[in-house]
Amino acid sequence: MEAVQTCSTAKQAPMEIERKFIPKQLPPDLAQYPYHEIEQGYLCTSPTVRIRQMDDAYFLTYKSSGLMAHQEYEMPLTKEAYLHLRQKADGILITKRRYLIPLDERHTIELDIFHGSLEGTTLAEVEFSSVEEANSFVPPEWFGEDVTYDSRYHNSEMSKRQEKERSSENG
Image (cartoon, rainbow, N blue to C red):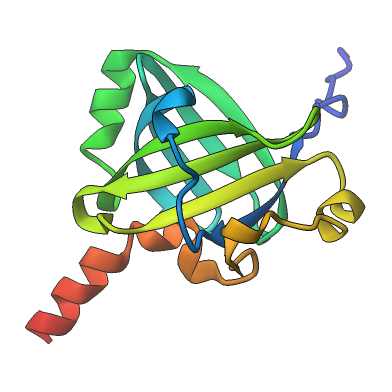
């Protein structure tokens, strides 16, 4: 009889550890920073399964539960696969411009300025290598309110907003 091998060597998804803030103001001269144009939708929000177009690249991302720290695994998609899955996204498609602003030698601020249904929403995020580092982070003054633990400011929840508003108008 032949032995059956199990997949016990499966690699664990990397951790994403980030803090999220609502900026009080935008930094001056945003045009000097590089940015990405992003469109994303959610196929599932528990667990989170997201599709994203970032400039000319396409991805499928799985995120485990967790507000500040969670596992995240990202896989490339073809444009055709992205467009196929895009039709299956629940809620609204999120569109935003993400500016990459250097903070220090190890950290970059990801400043998201949302468009479309979420026009007027702005969030700043910083990723960290450990929970301890994230907890000891002292944000710049312009960052404003820390919404790391407020699920309303996670994109997967924000994608449900227009859908909820429509259902409450019709209900």
